[in-house]
View (spheres, one colour):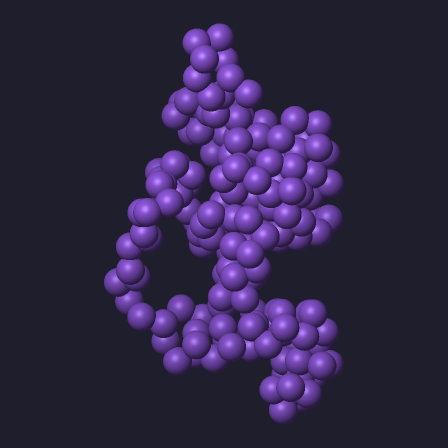
Length: 181
């Protein structure tokens, strides 16, 4: 899709169930030259993609009606050249890998500022993300492993507990908490 000057229109779909964040990010991205559309649910995001696939998308991982990964998958199917970024406050390696396999170009932890999101959206394919200043703690590595096994077991708590040789209730308590630093 091009504008009257022949340039590619920078259409951006923002999908997040946090309305204040969605509004702030929308204004910030409009000031950076994007034509912004917003959705608060996965269903709304997928409907907008089917109607008119955007060239860019920023999608929250956990939405009230499902997973942002479904939105990323729909975006990649409708427009393979689109650049999608996944945001989450519940980051783990398993969902990051899933997001990239489904077509996301980056995966950012919340709170992410507009500059970081913009940088991820326009980064070239040969640009690499900076290495983290602090390595993961042992607790974080354990948590990441649990999340990976949980995803491999198709988010089945009982099966994950069996695979990890852990009591199911203990696993449920771990899964309900945020990731350690």
